Structure formats: structure tokens, C-alpha cells
Length: 106
Image (cartoon, rainbow, N blue to C red; front, top):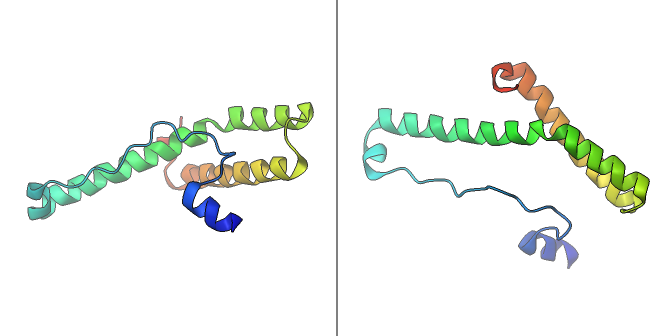
């Protein structure tokens, strides 16, 4: 039951998502022209990568907030472990970006 609730409504402990915008649909002219559609898809991919880069840039602040919560006893050990696991995933994404597209990172 909890898993179904989380799937439908998300984790109430998660922070707000921020500036997520719905993916823009291709226009009829872009759909009709392969070159225009390819350019449209490339722009969508660049925007997605930039969103990931934005998340990666927040790693130091996220790490500091996790450690502060752990030291202050604001969260239990399970929640701290979950946050650290999520941070590890973000760090793996950073490593992948550094290997595959270092020009995207500051």
C-alpha cells in the first residue's frame, strides 16, 4: 500500500522539484522536416543535460545539508542513509559527465 501511495503521490520527504518544465512538443513543421526535427531533438537533449549539470553543481551543498542533518539529529539513520545513497547516485552521474562530456561541467 505504501509503495502504491509513493508511486501515485511521490515521497513526501523529497524536496520540491524546482524549475521543471514540461517537455515542449515538436511543431507540425518540425515533424514534417527531418532536419528541423533533428535540431529540435538535439535542443531537447541539451536542455536535459543542462538540468543534470545543474543538479551536479549542487553536490557540495547537498552533502553539507546531509551532514548537518546527521549531526543535528534532524533525521533518523535510515533517512540519512537514503540521502547518502541518493548523493552517491548524483556523484556517479557527475563522474559519467566528467568522462563523457567534460566541457559541460564548470
